[in-house]
Length: 387
Image (cartoon, rainbow, N blue to C red; front, side):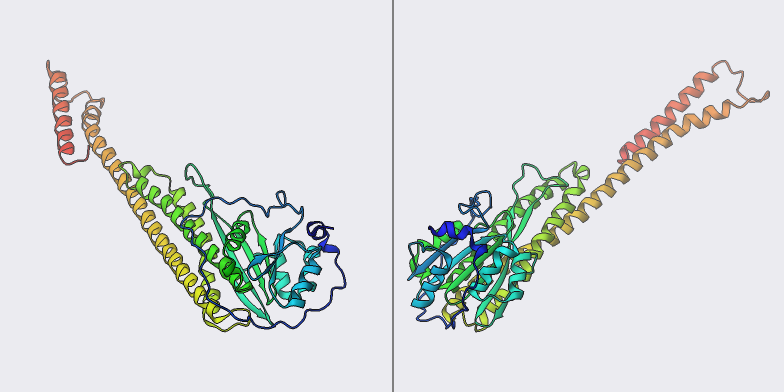
C-alpha cells in the first residue's frame, strides 16, 4: 500500500512503541541561508483540505537523508522506525488543522508532550518557544496581506494564521491553521539546497521562522501603501470630507498585525541566544539574523501606529477648521440679512403716528439705504475672508 494511502488512515494507528533516546545534532557544518524573497508572490495553498492530495489533515510526509528526499515508505510508522534505526536523516510531517483524533496517534508515535499537543490542535496561541524533554515546540503567527481595490471602513487588510512546529532529532512536525502560509513552496526551496536540509530539523525550523518574518515585512510594506493613500486623501483640498472610518479600520488591522509580530521577539531571542538540544550553535547565528529582520518589522509597525495617530488628529483638525469656516459664513450672511429685517420690522409696526410714513419718496429712500448697508457689510466680510 502506498504511503499516501496509509496516511489517510493515520488516525487508526494504535499501540506504537515508545521513542528511542534522542541525541543532539552531529557534525553541524556550514549553513547556507535560503535566498530571501523581497516580496513573496501568491502561493498555492496545497494544504487546504479541499486541495490536499491526501484528502485529510495530512499534507505531506517526506523522509530526508543527507538533505536528499527519499523514496516514500509504505506507511508513516515504517518511515519513522527507519530513521530511528539508522539514526540518520529525519521525517518532515506536515498537517493542516488536525482534529484531536487525527493527532492523538501521531503524538504517541513521536512522543509529543500533551500540553504541546493541546496547543497545536486548538490553536489561537501566542508566539512562543517551549522545551519538552529533548524536543522543541514553537508557535509562529502567520500574516497575509489581503488585496483590495479600494480601502473602505470595512476592508480586511491583514489575515492571520498560525504555524506550530515540533522539532526533535529525527523529526519535524508542522501544524498549520488558517487559509494561508502554505509551506509547500518552502519545502521545494529547501529541497533545491540539500546542504541546508542536511543540517537537520533545526534548519527547517530556521527556514520556517525566516519565511514567517519575511511575510511580516511584505505585509508591512503593503500596509504602508494603504497608509500613504489615506494620508494623501486627508491632506487633499477636500480632505475634511474624507471618511474617518478608513483610518480607524487601518488602526484596527494594524493592531492585529502588531499582535502577531511583536510577541515573536522574545521566542526568537531565545532561539538565537539560549542553548537548546535540537538547535546547534552554528544555526543559532542565523536565528539572530531573523531576529534582526523581526525588529525592523516591529519598528515599522510602531511608526505606522504613530503616523496613523497623527493623520487622525490632522483630519479632526481639518474637520474643526471646516466647521469654523461654515459658521463664519453663516454668521456673516445672518449679519447681512439682519439689516433689512430690522428696518422692515420697524416700519411694520402698526402705530398711527410714525415719522416718515407719508413721505412721497420714503420707500425708495429706505430700500436704497437697506441695499447700501447690505452691500457694505458684504464687502467688509468678503475682504476679511468670511465670505
